[in-house]
Image 1 (cartoon, one colour):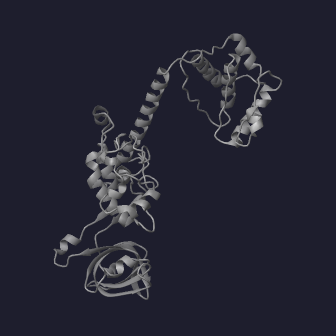
Image 2 (tube, rainbow, N blue to C red; image 1 turned 120 degrees about the vertical axis):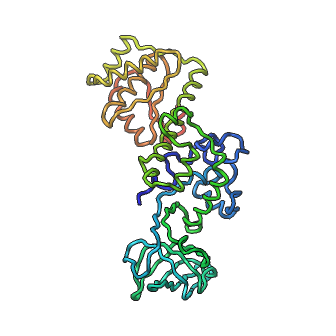
Image 3 (cartoon, rainbow, N blue to C red; image 1 turned 90 degrees about the vertical axis):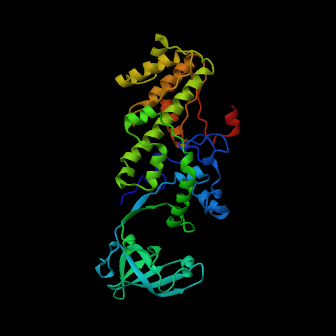
Length: 392
């Protein structure tokens, strides 16, 4: 079964935006600390202080975080089959009666061994580090198991299978069903099965509080489910393909992430442009000629086009907000230097930022070749720059 959307959280709509911070995020969490989805995760049924610390290590701090902790894959359980029909190394579901229970090791690290029998044969079942099962398994219990089929001493064997206790007085037809089980990223202290129970409790408490960030008209036009429906479907899909990359539910959540990101950019740009005026930095023919003279080559048509667009922005009295995108080696650094020299020609100071010291040094070295002999004062400023040099 393919993963639903990569690791743990889909990050089609990762729970990360707003996670633990109380800021507005895809779940509809607002800035108010009393919003239901901002409630600390320890108060979710079944969590408590100890498990809350484990969840915090996974980045899950609030009720909203937990309902966005999506499965990284789904486990398909086929209807139960007879033990004598099991195929080695294939997943299978069986129902049988516990004939024998043995365990060894301490309470916390016990290895539990069970002999399970149905009308067709017997299978050995082993759980490692399963102290929590030691006192729950008894002779005569009716169990439903799901796992990969192995072999030991001539008998089929299941190692660490999923287990479900059945009511022997119930209608046997009620036991024979297929289902999809979500598999969650967890830890040794909080494995996937326990995580699934906590997420189920969180969904019961949190789904009614999930807000819808997409306009109704837009959702209708694109045929998208509501956010609450999408979250529910991610945890319990009717069709697994809907929740995998490119699927119907995956696309709805991915679209929402992009929609909210673009909305945030637009609002930030509007807020920035309303704060005040920026200095006009026009490019005259003389400035353009002197800048181009620094380069031992003519700019490409693409470089000329984006330089004109950037110059038009810089000549205005409102802040420029522009992304220049291009392949490696397409000449973005030259365009950045042109813009920097435009600011300097207008008697302004300018800084070119780089994400790492190595990249900053590389950019500085390449720009030094173009600025050799010029009257432009320049320097390289990194974390290793001495205080005296930094002050200078």
